[in-house]
Image (cartoon, rainbow, N blue to C red; front, side, top):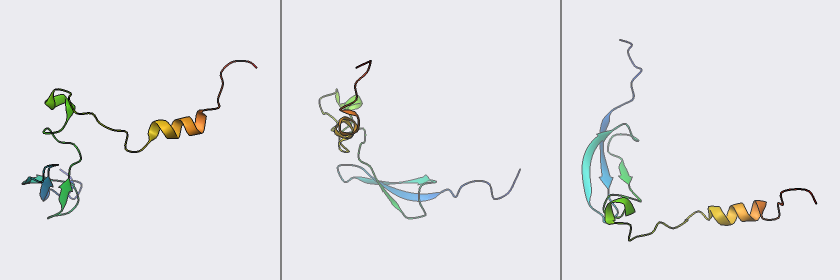
Length: 76
């Protein structure tokens, strides 16, 4: 088995949307870092029955329309 090819596996803190935290082990960041989640099982539509909606925070549709809104297909 080769040495020094595996990522560092250390303890981190995971913070859920509601502020709840727990300790786990991960390769994320460095030892003692905090991973803040935007979506977790308490707010994700798949686990809440689909009553909450995810918003397009980045404006991807608007950005697409801005770039390609004047594009026409076919012959003029």
